Image 1 (cartoon, rainbow, N blue to C red):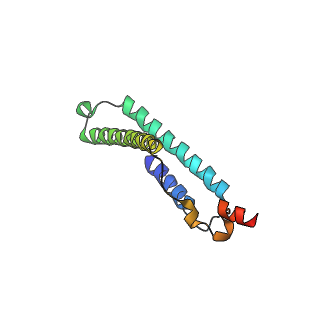
Image 2: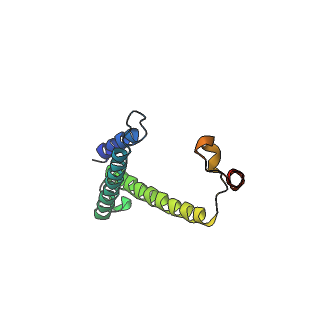
Image 3: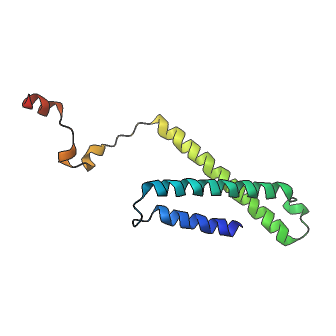
Length: 120
C-alpha cells in the first residue's frame, strides 16, 4: 500500500509541475488531494507502528526491519513538519527586502508620485 501511495504522490507531483496543464484549479485540487493522501499514509504508518512490537521484541529480523523503517518514516515526517514550522516562524520575524516591481513590465507599473504631479 505504501508503495502505491508513493506512486500516486509522484503522479500528483508530476501533474503539479507540468507546463502542459494550464488549469490552476485542477492543480490546486490535486495538490490538496495529494496532501490528504500523504496524511492518510502517515496515520496508517503510525497505527501500524503502534500495533507492532518494538524492533527488539520482534519475532524475526524482517519484522524488526519493517518496524524500524516505519519509525524512521514517522521521525522524518515530524522532522519535516517541525522544520517547516520553524522556517515559517523565522520568516514571519524578518521582512523581505525584495523589490518585485523590477519583474513587471514598465507599462503595467503604477506611476510614481513625481509622474502624477508632472501630469497634473
